[in-house]
Image (cartoon, rainbow, N blue to C red):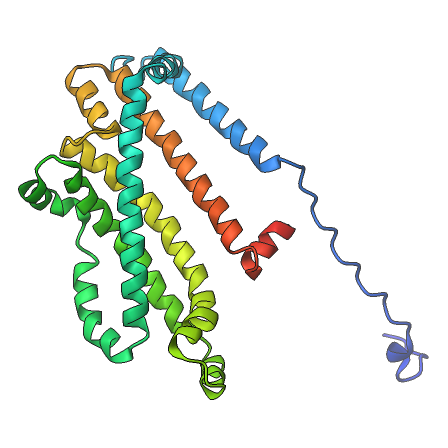
Length: 286
């Protein structure tokens, strides 16, 4: 039998309140911790790559050891032919991306600011956007042959939609209250674009540029590989037809390094252009 409690009613509420829980300590990140983790991952991958061809799992004729590939890459990097190919690839990539960004910004702002025009073009955009750029390779060869123009056609088509769609989203994200306030204060069309639309759409535009830069590099290498226009893709095709797998792997590693460099450069541009944006300021504060 349970003894009746002698505590008065409300004793529980009269008990002293528990002290507020202390905030969880923030995890401290070592300076350069991400770089150390990334370097460790790369070293682990290279060790695995070095070990696998030396076992019976994969023939070294099909997958040369990492040491052989890296030595081949170092030899190729000492030749003018390699850097000429890198220059051709970067030229096609940069020119195609610049054309795509310019066209997407102009068309995106023109269409995005006119609701009727956006409604009329929506179905056309949804039809054209999913078409893979590689499906246009026969058309590019038919029109431009194996010239760099055929590569530019594929790169511009692929990168354009990445930027254009983001610009449309950015223009549509304008605060209607701010827009009405700007109109009430008599700001003209260009003033609203300069002080209202552009700051709103700029984060979307930078995201589109980052996506478009990666897609443009992929299409540049693909076009050079299949069409035969000058660049790293053509060098890979020549090495493959010559039966030199270690050169093929070395050039593939070179395209990977190029991709990392492009992504790093675009991220640096993003941090600089959007240093006023909360997303970038929050990232810098971590």
